[in-house]
Image (cartoon, rainbow over all chains, first blue to last red; front, top):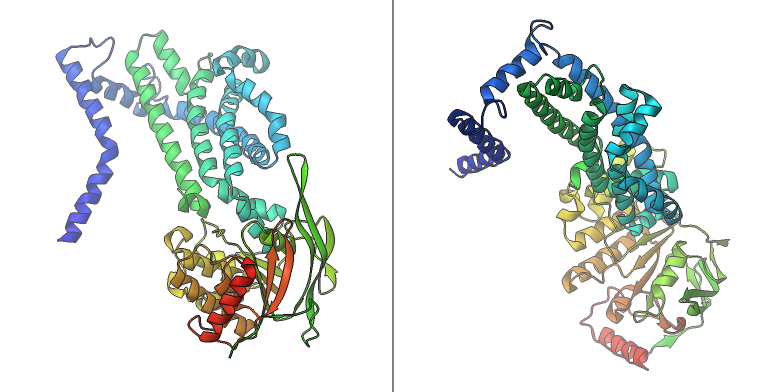
Length: 268
Length: 263
């Protein structure tokens, strides 16, 4: 009896994340059905569904936007992935070192905090002059934007690691380099994970910014093309796809970290 | 029987080999521009297999002394010789059990105990056997897959003890390791430590502010005074083991030592 109760409780808990999306969809359907908001501002979910189907499954050339999905998503994934990778490669080590060495932290602080204050969009013109239109600009913008949360959280994580843990490691014969990998990074892992997740989230935002500039493919480019052609249904399809891919990539990142690092799985 | 407090000279003419030699140790900290002598003229020898308690009130520098023995802090002057060689860095020949919880929170009990063996070239099977052995020595076999946050303070200190014992240190440095535990758990831990000491006959230097703990455990008690921290007395505890707090001789000794401290 109790077991049944328990499993019911558990399945109820797994439903919780879907409550808001369901309410949202229901409201949307009601609004569209009643004509409260006209279709040229917000199309009916059915229309969005059809447009999405065309975009994803139909043969290219059958209709505008038909079958572009794979090509666009692939291009965007490569841009997000490489931009994010650059941000991790620079942000994690620099952040960890700054967290441990106050001299490095002081050296970086003014520069980092000044650059951090510059809105990403103001880098766009410069990036276009430097890198031209295309993948490089987007990757640059993504890497730049994702760097800051990754760096800052790595600093915070490395700073809050109890120095006694490092002392304990030294006493057990774990020298500096090994201590970094076996004590410092695991100890900082909850913060590092937050930084990586924030960084990846921001990567998607800046991806769209980078793709607004006339690149031929990518999820941001689709949204821009659709705007020019007045296809609000495709714009919304693009937004939904980015939301889903963002959510999925966050899930994959979290799962991968938890699989690879005991500290990620056991401390959060 | 009324045991007298015998104050012995710092160099004991006994037979045991001297393993640790502390010569005229001094530690000065700089605080707001002023120099503060925390320890001064610390001078004693430790024989192999001896259990020594450093007894003193908080702020007398006993933890600082232990940190220097561990190699975490460098002395301002004087020297620490382990088997005739100066101590400069932390090392596995002198292992520390800290007062605070310093287990790695992302590792299970067993992984914590195995941690120090990481760098050593040993095959997996012998490591696992050794870890199992030390896990059971501290009575945690049932809890080997628990995380530190899931076990009690006493169990955490058991893990802390096992993870250093497994490294076979020559000297065990213990910095008020049981101070944060409740009275019963503390007594359990003291008994555990004594039985492990009997088994491995490590040299143990145990810092405490608890008079009864010092008497229960040690062969010798170094009493420290404050400002600057000095060793005021070196007292031989010649009570028979096992020592029980209810025994008359224990009570006498404890009362005397306590009075002595207050003088």
